[in-house]
Image (cartoon, rainbow, N blue to C red; front, top):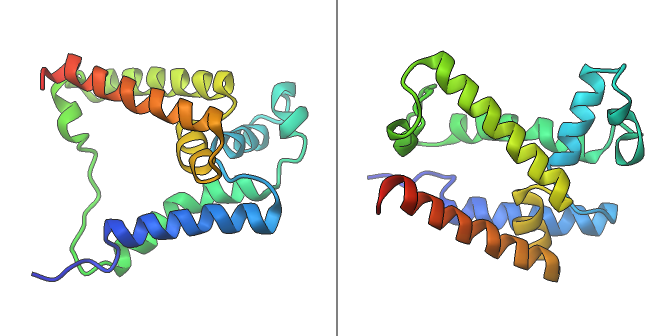
Amino acid sequence: MEISIWNGYVAGFAIGLFVILHFWLLGKPAGCSTGYGNLCGLAFPKVKFFRIGEYSNLNNSKLWFLIGIPFGGLISALTSVESWHLSFDMGLYEQVLPQTYSAKAIWLIFGGMLLGFGARLAGACTTGHALVGGAMLNPASLIAGAVFFTSALITTHLLFGL
């Protein structure tokens, strides 16, 4: 059995290295939620919320970081020695999500809205706190990361009775 070029250890090391280099080179932590706000500002130019404060400069490194994530996944899939295919399978979440695509879409959009609200409330998304803030040993981010993982474990046990 061949081992994929992009195994978890290589990917984890690359993410950690990127986080440190991004901060070292640009003096700003990497993250997705601001980039998502920038993308919203480009898509909805008349909405003032996405044009003020941290969103005043729409073309920045966080926008390009967000845009690069799916392209990085595609490059990883194309260069992997393992075969892959496009799928909408949600894994073990198929057991708790509604079965129709329209109902799944409603639940996932609602969940995304809650995630966005939580990211704004916490000052960063889970990636920003757990990966970036954790790599920089930010105390608030370390606490937030612990809360994220603990709540995920509790939710998983409640949903699946594991």
